[in-house]
Length: 57
Image (cartoon, rainbow, N blue to C red; front, side, top):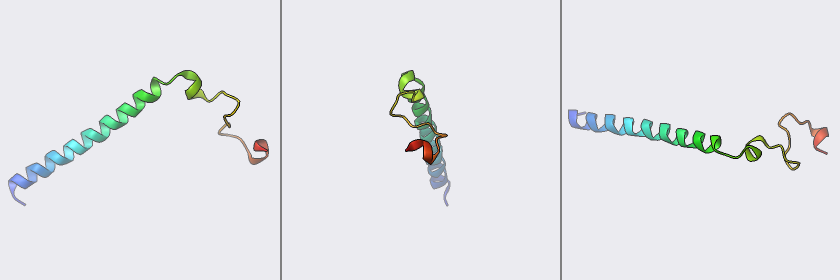
């Protein structure tokens, strides 16, 4: 590998890592800014995560 292609690969790898970090930070901000009623799932149509099959009937 030449020095030029090695630098290009390094820049590409760093850009990919920064892109993944930015996407994850964006998703966290979207979840954080969600209204409480949508984030908590306290509505009647929501099923609790600890529900058993008999409780779902």
